[in-house]
Structure formats: structure tokens, C-alpha cells
Length: 610
Ligand code: PEP
Ligand code: MG
Image 1 (cartoon, helix red, strand yellow):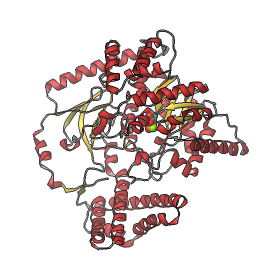
Image 2 (tube, helix red, strand yellow; image 1 turned 90 degrees about the vertical axis):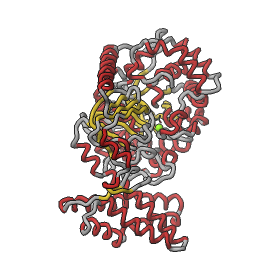
Image 3 (cartoon, rainbow, N blue to C red; image 1 turned 45 degrees about the vertical axis):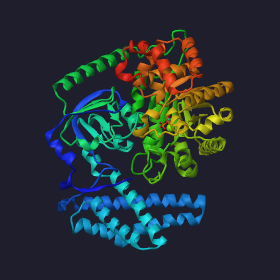
């Protein structure tokens, strides 16, 4: 985390120029389709600013509470990390965390911040910033390695506390009391988006992220138009600016002129017309013209979404990202989880529901569980690694899942598996939880257990994994990220995130072949499932099931119904011989772009030229 500070009166020159309400047009990444126009709601977040405020007396208690809650949340988090560190690396390494805990309990530090809030009437973030910075400065000036280490500890704690205050900060409450605003942020976290109610947020514009960041995925689920990857945009707008967000084309217009507004209405109309047309064909079979059936399932992030997935033409849930249930202050209990899973399973029965076990970490930090200061969070302590280290959390979830499976339509999916040992340990946990529940007198249906193929190591071991898994689901978002070493959330390298890179296509091909040799089905649940050109390739590669944002199912079905399996099979055979993504893309474009344009789904599938 980087934090900068400024006084409200010291706004930089470019911000002051905004008084003139100049028109700004910027192109970014089309993260979630749709169009909206509204007032800018700037979301202050981690990377932006710690502002000095003088607060009225009536706000003192709120600010004190904000700080104290952040301290206790951070202490809880550090204590957990300490425990894990002890069990993994021995007592010595965990002493760092013991030091962190001691600093957090230091009355000088805590009271120093509280005094600043109360006596000097400063807001909590500013008070914390000043007090900790003074401490850090003091330690840094002492010429001793031990003291410099202490300064590093303090900087680490500073970051944790800032994040803890951010997550429960006022931005969220303010959004909750707004209506139809456009969130403009340098970076948004999924947990903030989870807290908004329908109608509160009309659209989103973000500096960071690409199409596969979890905020983008969530925006698509919530049907909120979004543009990401706008780089330095957030600093250019202010609260009452009007903004148009074109999530289908990936463009934003601030303080639009009449012509912009006319074009906006025109495109919005096309979008609505295409949506209505697609809706009329939602009950048709997802079958190619020569009779190959492709199962179309939906990805969901919220249990309530299960109510609408069949209405969009999906015949099951291919991925429920269960970690979204954990975006709250305390982890959900076994009963709370059981009820949430039951809601999905019962709504969907007899259709299959694939629930992925907790995939916390990366860009999905779960309060009280995830480590918040990892240098490489996507490759850090996350996902199945957390679950196998914290069997208390994992088994609570597994018990809840098994108890919720009264209809027998549950499939459990394990994320981030990189080898057989992890799969075996996870399956042993499932078997143990099942035995326990049976011994307690519960009926527990048998459950299929699948493996997400999203780490290159899993592809290298795919034949072995296929022997012990009931199904595969390829997580192309992470598989591309890890295969090409391209951070999926980094807007500076969006162009390098290439789904059609030969390495990626070969990995998918190997996975499908191994799965079919072993007689197990293979799905794709990453964002490739909803990209038209990728859909052609995935069908040609022999994928059995595609799972995607519910409302992408309709456009994907239209694509599948327009193609011949034999033709895309031949395309794949040609493409697998090619040297680079550019050759694959231009071949696909030449062969299929016009056909796809003729389908009338342009508002939903974005640019075809990627
Ligand atoms: C993936 O990695 O492709 C996937 C579906 O999982 P997530 O996007 O949640 O990481
Ligand atoms: Mg993934």
C-alpha cells in the first residue's frame, strides 16, 4: 500500500482546474457491458490520500471507534498470522508478529492517537498517520539494525491499520446513502461493491484493473456497467461532475457535450434492443448447427443470483465463488454458511451447482483471514493453502456444504490446486467431515469433487489429477496470469494478458485430452467462456461445459447455435500450429468477425479485435 498525504487546501493544480468543468474523454478496458450517465462519486481509497481534517466534537467518538476497531481487527489478524507462522516455521520467525502485537498494545501509541483525535480534533486516519510517522522517524534515525527493523515493523503495522480503517471507513457509508451515482476510484475492492444496494451505483470507472479482476467480475454479476484500466483518471474528476460510462466500448466521457449525450442515448437504445432480442432465445438449446451440445452454466458471487440464472438460460451453476460470503467483519458460522448454500442448492435443484471452496487472497482479501501485506498476494498465502493450514475454517465450510446438500445436486470445486498432495489432503478433509456428520446422525449424499485447473503445475500433472478428480474446471483467468506471468489486475500490461497465446491454448488442449482419456468432464469457468472468439476455440478444443456471468449465457448461446463443431474443430487444429497470439487472433478475426457481427450482440461482447 502506498499512502500520500495532503491538506484539503493544497489540492494540486490539475484538480483546481476542474472548476472549469472541462470535457474529458478516455478509453480504458470494457469491464462490464452497459451504459449509464450520472454524477461522479469519488471513492477515496488506499492509494490516494490521507487527508487532514478538523472534526466537530460530535464526530470524536466515531473517529475514536474507527481507530480502536482497526487496532483490534489488526491485532486479531496479526495473532492469526503469528499462529500459522509458528506452526510452519518455528517460534523464531513468529517473534516478528509477537513484536507487532506488542506495538499494537503499546499505550503510548494508542493513547497518542486517541489524544490527537480528542484534544486536537483530528480525524482518525490523520491522527494515526501523524503518530505512527513520528515513531517510524525516531526509529529510523537511530543507527542500529535492530531499531531499523523496528521501524520496518511499524511501517508494516501502519499499512495494516490503514487498510483496516479503509475497510470500515466512511466511503462505504456514504455510498450506501447515495442513489444512481458513478463510482470513480483509483482502485476498488470487491467488498465495497458487495455492500451497495440495487440502484445505488449506476456505473463504475476505475484507474486500475482489467477484465478479469474480481471487481470487474462482480460488476458484471451485478449488471453494473464498468470501465477499468483508466490509469490516472480518478484524480481528474470531482464530486459533482457528470460522467457517461460506456462499459460495452470501454469509454468514459466527463462533462459531456450535447453530441456525447445524443450518442450515449443512441447506444443505450441499441444495448436495450439487443438485450431484449437475446432474452427471447434463452430457452433454446445451446447446440451447434451440426448437433454438438455444450452445457452452459452460470458463475455467481451472491446466493440471491441463483434465482435468476435459469431465466438467462443457464442449466446449472458452474462456479459459486464462496469467498464472497466471507466479505464481512467476522467469518460466517457453519449455520450461516449452510443456509446460504442451501438457498442456492434448493433454488437450482435438480440442476447441478458447483460451489468452490474458499478462494481468499490475491485481490480478494478476507478480513480476519487473509494476510494484508504480502508482497505477491496472488502467489501468496491464499486459496486452498489457507484452507489446508486453517482446517478450522475449511472444515466449517465443508460441513456446511455437506449439510446443505439435501437435494444431492452439489459439486465441490477446489481452487488453486498445484499437485496431488493438496488434492488428497482436501479430499481427506471432505471424507472426514462427512464421516463426522454421519456419526452425528445426518444424512449425507455422496458429492463429486472437482479440481480447478488454474496453476501451470496442475496442467503438467493433469493425467495424475484426472485419476483422482471427478471433474475439472479450468480457471483461465488465473491460468493465463500464471502461465504468462502477467498480473491479471495490472492495467499497464493488459495487452500481455493473452487468452489465445499458444502456451495457454496448449494447456487447455492437454487438460481436455487428459480429462477425456480418464472419462471425466471438463469445464471452463474463467472469463474466456464469454468471449466470442474464445468460445469458438473452446468448443473446438472439446470443452464440455462453459460457465460465465449469468447474462453472458444468452449471447454465448447465440454464438454456439451459429457455428458448426466440425468447422471450429478444424480451426483449432490450425490454430494449435501457430506461433503467437497475434497470428491466432488475426486468423480468427478473418474467419469469424463478420459472422459474429451479424449476430447482433455487439453491446455484450465488446471489441472483436483483441
Ligand atoms: C479463474 O481463475 O479463471 C477463476 C474462474 O477463478 P477466479 O476468477 O475467481 O480467480
Ligand atoms: Mg482463479
